[in-house]
Image (cartoon, rainbow, N blue to C red):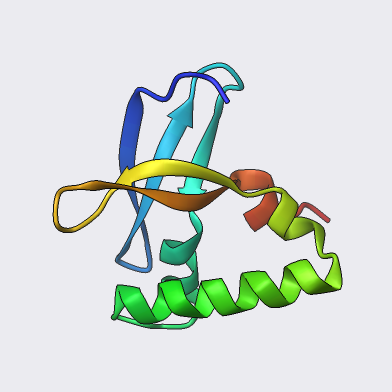
Length: 97
């Protein structure tokens, strides 16, 4: 992945979803735990992150391609520190019919 210099907070149903711009590939990478928190209606980030960890292991065991599409990028957490976080690009969240 190319240099990520744009960091953004997106909102989905009034919930924060962290995103990073990939200049080299001209696309946004979105935080998977943030998306999981929105989809499962969890306010506790740690519970959403743990659910994603469980789901990721299960999907990986099943050979699901979603897991192979994740990238770990350093995103800013609520404590102000940057942590490696699983991210996916828009194509994994949205599929055209």
